[in-house]
Image (tube, rainbow over all chains, first blue to last red; front, side):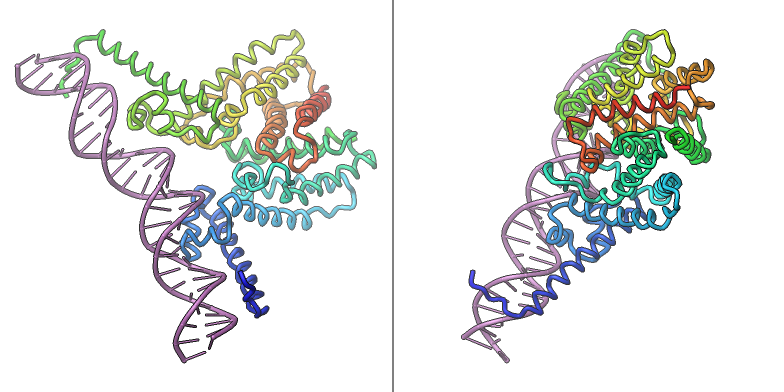
Length: 212
Length: 212
DNA sequence: TTTGGAAAATAAACACTGTTCAGTATATTT
DNA sequence: AAATATACTGAACAGTGTTTATTTTCCAAA
């Protein structure tokens, strides 16, 4: 109970080491996601790769959901980077098209990350009911602000930015998730190779329709 | 190797009993899905409820995926029934609206079934890569044929029935699945109670947009 | 420099999961 | 009644997330 910690340098190093360990865990987890798929990501597998005991992970994360939440954070950071790179047009509506295209491309290049970000339940269990889910904010806000600008400049038919944002997002997510889960190809008769083209056409058509 | 079964009545009864047992298993499984959620549906839980050993279930189903596939079949039958009841207008475009509404309503009344039908991976593992997924066909065809009729009568903007069908379906599924997975409410600022209204409005707006 | 105590890591266990298999009980045929 | 085929199950295997008691490591005071 008595205060016995005097060396500030050491507690700082300890905190640094704690953060480094969390980084190591998340890095391995995200790598396993991308390389081996969601199924292979177990606490024991992660522990094996970082050469620690499974119990050690629980010294750094309360449970698996909390860990997956941090992995999700990382995945959203990747998406944000790609948005910044690819959404750069002067014309707001063109930026909307670029954003949609970047979103689709991300889902194709990182399907396992997309899963974790938008489909899988687990990481959301780490978010308590009262508090807010912050991971999705930058990506959502990027679309929302763009939508608001398009509405203000009368470039789209939407009157309400929230409805417009959710509509565009849902349209893209619907296609992507149905496809990722094998519901799309296996029922529509569209071949696996042609699916991306169909999706591109549908998105293009949709964006043409919402244009004012 | 020699043919030793002579009593046809008995083998017929055996087949009947086998079918009855499969029914009992599927019925309990679907009941557990609806009542307790996907998470609680384990082979052991099902076995407990039907008062048989877990190993017995494997005499009737190769694995859990095959069982979930049969549960999915049942769920799609429920959806088909609701379609038949609620999609009855003379006007094809109105039928399209009715279909969309019925789809949304189904997802709200049976979220766990919706999950199994359109989101969860497992039941699709039972479908081999070469063969077709038949469960979704009646529902997909209902929308597809309706879409084709609307195109033929120039009631919608779509030129291609497949693109039109997948677009409408994806739009609805996107909203529903983002919402079911807690991605929608926790990022948009829309309250949990207002979400259905926002979805209804968005769908209404979309249907207005695709109208020729 | 040795000792006392805090902090970090772990082995082992618990309660689950899907699945398999050897062995038992039941039903049918010979 | 004996032999055989069918139906069923207990126990085990290999895996999961998680907890706890124990050991190892590390740092500060005596």
